[in-house]
Image (tube, rainbow, N blue to C red; front, top):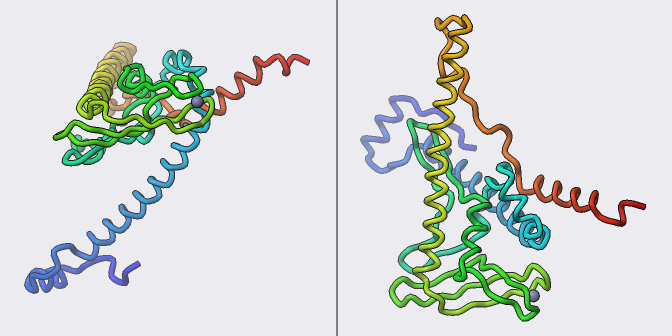
Length: 247
Ligand SMILES: [Zn+2]
C-alpha cells in the first residue's frame, strides 16, 4: 500500500506541470486492485473448469433437467469453452457493459454451452465410442485452419480434432452468446414491466405514492446458483435414487 492515498490539489498541479505521470497514484492503486482481483478470479475459474470436466458424466446425465431448471440453465459457463485465434484474440463470452454507470456482466449460460455442443462442429467420437464435446479451439481466420480438443466424459481421454472450419467454431459460439445478450435485455424489460404492474396494484390498494416508486418493487431472479451447488444437488439426487440407498 502506498503512503499517500489521497492526492492534494497542489500535488495534482505539480504532477500536471511535470507532465510526466499520466496515471495518478490513486488511479494506480485502483488498477493494482483490479489486477489482483482479476488474478484471483482466474484461479477461481480454473478450479471451476476442473470441477466441471471432472463431473462431466454426471452433468450430461442430467442435461434435460438442467435445461428445464432456470437456476441451473443460467449458470455462468463462459470459462468452460476456450476459443480464439490469430488476429481475433480470445473469444469473450463474459462481456462487461457499462449501462448508466453500472457494470453489467453478461455471461455465456450453461444452457447455451449445451446448445453449442449440439452442433456437429463441436462433437467428436472418442476411441471408446463415447461422443465427446470440444472445450477448446484455436485457429486462423485467414487460412481457416484450426486445432481443437475435447475430453471424454467416460474414459477421460483428451481427443484432438484438426482443421475443422475456424470460422464455423467462432460463428456458432458468437450466435449462442448473442442470444444470451438478447435474453438478458428481454428479461430486464419484462422485470421492469412486472414492477410497474406491481406498483400500480399497490397504489390502487391505497399505498401512498409520495416516497414510493417503481424501483422499490423491482425484483431480480434471487440468489445465483453456483456450479458447485448444482453438482452437489445432482449427486444427492442420484444418491437418493440409487438402489443401494434402499437397504
Ligand atoms: Zn473415451
